[in-house]
Length: 368
Ligand code: 13P
Ligand code: 13P
Ligand code: MG
Ligand code: MG
Ligand code: MG
Image (tube, rainbow, N blue to C red):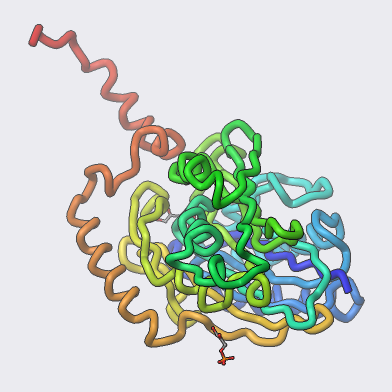
């Protein structure tokens, strides 16, 4: 049976600033998705949040980029904005809804979207990851570790189905172009690109031996749609695990190191990506630190069995502790780079208008 998994998310308003999604937003979204399940449009769904981003995980048989599915998600984001966020005056009501009218595909309209279609295997473990206060390029490091680094993923050495490696599809989000690179032989070329996560974003990963889809992320830049700072494109990621793909534990292993990502406080700072259980899926200190939640499901005929709250475990306590120490260390830099992002990333924030005012006061400098 061919199943499509669609994970579509948006920030449509935060409680007490950019901290967390209001429970009433999730309630109404659940109600609408339940109705869509009853009509048969959806097989199953799961609603959750990370920070101020509302997450709609859906399964169906309509394929990727389906207008009905995308419209369902768009209409829900609009309705919860109108019926909950605006009356309660939640912060940034409808923040990620950048367009007025739906035109067939939610991509390019503000919400983030990751979708994959595949033939459901005899057993199909699916892992979904959602992060807040960061950007889609945050997955680059994780995806490289999971699908290309044998020091992370033992299966690259041991499993014949994975031994020939994976193909990474990388998007240049400024030029709207993409390139496919094959690992392990083009690993260094891949790293030359994805080490710049603000520009080159891993969109999909395929298994080389048979071309099966292994992972897909949301890869958008809100500021490039809106032309100004409108928060970060807090990203999502779907990964298939086990039996010819990395084991669940190999996927999770990449999250044990809280690597530095862009997007903390005003989308303008670097901080560690902290893996947290759903109960800590809120952003507090300096509107962060950037957080990621991970949920594990087993699919059966498209139904979502689960979830397992993957980071709700003492095995990730040391990671969280390290993230706290790194957060503290980074914070002590205050407004200095590299805690604050570089000028090319600050271009879409409100900093240029501050600098503009100083322009007239510059005089020629004395000869050195
Ligand atoms: P089990 O014996 O617990 O199924 O372990 C399988 C495995 O190799 C996990 O990495
Ligand atoms: P969000 O994209 O999560 O709304 O982040 C806004 C922000 O910059 C908070 O400091
Ligand atoms: Mg927000
Ligand atoms: Mg957010
Ligand atoms: Mg955002």
